[in-house]
Picture 1 (spheres, rainbow, N blue to C red):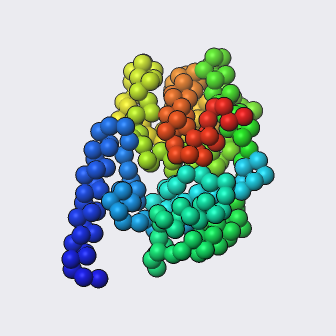
Picture 2: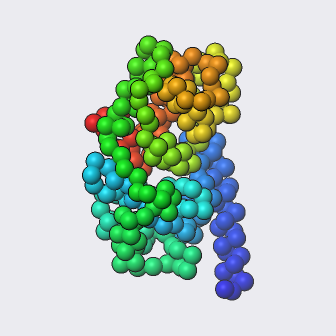
Length: 239
């Protein structure tokens, strides 16, 4: 690789961080992987799959950054087309046929989860309903188990958004409980869900109703701002 090429890549990398900072002061931020993509450098990513209501869906995933890198596709060929245009592997770029094979292989094994995650839209709907009931009644929802794919993917999707932007609509609840917005991110959202569902949580000192209110605000933000496919899956109206 020529020195000029290396210098150009370095400039792009640094520029991407400046862009990321600018986004961080507004509506969203980009991780290093997405920053590189924004700057014209294809990120290294693979393909993961999830079974939703009996059908396979596919998405790009950065294993080094633990980050979702694409919309959610219901078609191997569309996933492969997107990957060939936007991603590379550690050995460089590959044609669509290569990515189609990766999509097929992702149905047998998950590099991120091991077993292929299985979820239904009723799981999503149940989460929304349970949180709304917890807000109204203020009681722990002990008889509902959260699908682990939901909590894992929420963390990974959140990295394309500024964390505290999800909490602006519930600032009064944060103030009431002496919680700083700047201290909240996706991990805290999962901890709030644990409080609502009667699991171990560092938020055991706040009411179930307040925890559910904050968790709902987070879900509304993520579901409304996520990329295509994810937005529809996480939507309150997915069922």
